[in-house]
Amino acid sequence: MWSRFSNPAKFEALAKTAGPIAFWIFAACAVFGLVNGLLFAPAEQYQGESARIMYVHVPAAWMAMGSYSFIALMSLVAFVWRHSLADVAARSAALPGAVFTALALFTGAVWGKPTWGAYWVWDARLTSMLLLLFIYFGYMAVWQAVPEQARAARFARILALVGFINIPIIKFSVDWWNSLHQPASIIRADGPTIDASMLWPLFAMIIAYTALFTWLVFLGMRADLARQRIEKRGARSPSHPVRVSAESEA
Amino acid sequence: MSGGMQMTRAVLMRDLKIAFRSGGGWFYALFFFAVFTALTAIAFGPQLSALASAAPATVWLAAALAIQFAAADAFEGDMRDGSLRAMAAEQGGLFNYWLAKAGALALTAALPMIIAAPFFLTMLGIAFAKGVAMAIILAMGAPALLFIALLTAALASGLRAGGLLATIIAAPFAAPVLVFGVSAARITLADGGLISPEVLILGALSLFMLAVTPVFAIAALRVSLE
Amino acid sequence: MDFGAHTPYIFVAYAVSIIAISGLIALRIRRFRTSIRAEKDASEH
Image 1 (cartoon, each protein chain N blue to C red):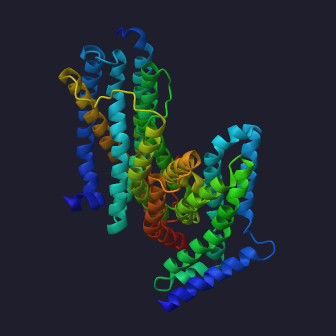
Image 2 (cartoon, rainbow over the protein chains, first blue to last red; image 1 turned 180 degrees about the horizontal axis):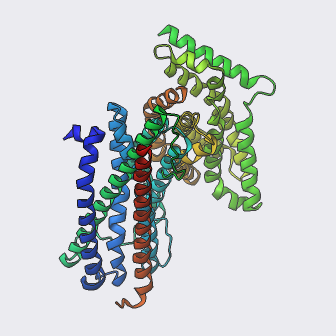
Image 3 (cartoon, chains in turn cyan, yellow, purple; image 1 turned 90 degrees about the vertical axis):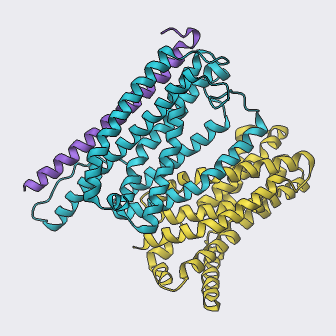
C-alpha cells in the first residue's frame, strides 16, 4: 500500500484509476446534495430557509480544515521519510484548500447577513477560518518565492508543520477572545435538532467536496510529475531545451 | 557544552557590539515603537480618554510589528559572509547560534521597548503605575513574539521578497499572543490585578514557542544554506 | 425555488460556490492537459 504511494510510476497507475472514480463520486453526490438541499430538504426551524446555505458552507469548512490536515500530514511524511512525492501531494492540495477556505468564509458571511444582520461578524469560527486562510496564503507564497522546486518544498514543509502545530492554539485563543466580546449567537448545524431529511444532503455534499478534493489533488500531482519528468529530461539533453509554459500554480 | 556556550557568547557579544556602536541598530525597534504610538495618537485624536481605551491594543501591535521588523534581517549578514555556514558545520552549532540571536534580539529590540513602554503609555493617558504593570505583561509575551519573528526570519532568509513575506507568515501565529496580551493588559487596567489567567497563558505561549520554534528555525536555516 | 426574503442570499452562496469550484476544476484540467502535452512533445524530440 505504502510503496504504491511512494513510487511515482505506481502512483501514476493508481491516480489513473482512482482519479476518475473520485470524479464520478463527486459528480453524483454533488447533484444529489444540491438538488435535495435546494428543492426537497425542509427549511430549518430556527433560521428558516437561509439554513440551506449550510449545504455549501459546512462541506467547504470541513475541507478547509481537511485540506490543511492533508498538507500537514504529507509535509510530515516528506520531512521524516524524505519522499518527494509527498511534497508534490502537499503542494497540489494548497490551492483547493485555499479555495475551500475562502468559500467557507464567503458562504458564512452570506449566511450571516440574514442571521446576524451583518455580513461580517467577528465570530470565533469565521475569525479562525480567516487566520487559516492567511496560513494558506503564506504556504502558497513560499512555493512561489523559491524558483527551485526541491528547495521550495523543504521550506514549505517547515511552514506547513509549524502552521499545523499552531492551529489548535489559534483556535483556542480566538474562542477565548470571542467569548469576551460577544456570546455565540447562531444555532449551527451541529445542534441536536437536525432532521434526517437535512442530514442526507449534507452528508452527500461533504462526500462530494472530499471526492472533489481527492480528484483535484490527483490531477495536480500528475501535472506536477509530468513537469518534473520534462525538467529531468531537459537537464539530461541540453541540446534540446524544452520550453515549459511559464504559468505557475501554487 | 562549554564550547557551545562560548560560541553562543561570542556571537551574542559580536551582535551587541554591532548594535550598540555608533550607527548601530539597537534603537530601531524602540524608534518604531515610538513612531507607531505617536501615529496611533494622531489617528485616534488627542482625547486621552479615547486613547486610554486603545492603549493596550496599540502597545501590543507596536511591539509585535517592531519585533517582527527588528528580526527580519537577523540572519542576512551571517548568511552573506559565510559565517553561518561555518557555524552550521559544528555539532549543535546552529542551536547555539539561534540562542545567541534570540538573546541579542531580546536585549536590543525587546528590552528597550519594554523599559520605554510605561513612558509611552503615560502619553496615551495611562497612569504610570499601570503602565509599569502593562510593561511587565509585555515582558511575559514578548518572548513568544520574538521566537515567532526569528522563525519567520529564518524561513524568509532563503526567499525572494523575504521581509514582507515573513510578516504575512508570522501574522496568524502572532494572533494568539495579541489576544492574550491585550486582554491581560485590559484586565490590569480595569482592576489593577497583575496575575490573571491571561497573563499565565501568555507566559505559557512564550514557553511553548521556545520549545517548538528553534527546531523549525534551525531546519529552515539549513535549507537556506544549501 | 422561492425562499422568501432569504432567496438572494441562498442564490449568491450557491452561485459563488459553484462558480469558484468550476473555476478551480477548469484551472486544474487546463494545467494537467498542458503538462501532459508538453511531456509528449518533449519525448518526441
